[in-house]
Amino acid sequence: MKPEGHYVDIELVMKLKNHDEEAMILLYKNYWKDLYITAFKVLKDKEDCEDIIQDLFIRIWNKREETDIKTSLKSYLLAAVRYEVYRKVRESRKYESIMDDIIEMVSDQSLSDMLEYKELQSRISRVIDTLPTKCREVYHLSRNELLSHKEISSRLSISTKTVRNHLTKALHYLRISMDQILLVLLLFFSAK
Picture: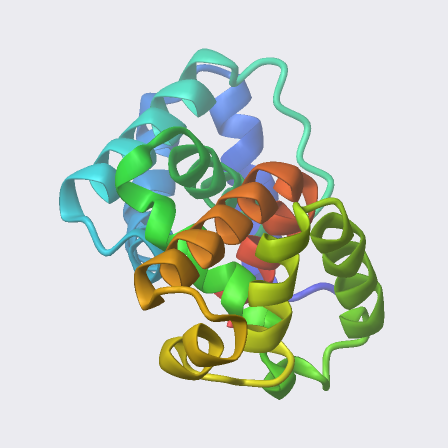
């Protein structure tokens, strides 16, 4: 037997498909806060989060007749918000640090409990293997051997600024090369 809330959601979607504006208002009242919190966990920007939520509800209203929700309404809406957050992060330079953080989290051993950790590491390794030799070496010393910038600088006889530049280049290349996997990770981390 499905929970009572599920029946309310089904009824709400049916009313929405029948152009019921009150159903749209109820949908907004029931879910905007959870959707906003989900977006804000990642973006930390009130205006961008509000824009995402507003655009989502406008899109739902405009496409109400063709919307076919096969999961719970809440799951559907949360997935839509996570996708929009990912799109915003991907398109806006102001969120580059979020992508860098996600890449670093994947490189971090604390994620070893993830089921796909080995696959993620394998994908990252394949991308890293395509980097120029010095850049790859700096990345390896930083992420695998956990050396500081100063230690890497000393070991490779290069300046700490050059170390930072190589790491920035490696992370930038990873960010561009790993679009699909970053979407999965963004959805995973924003769901926690």
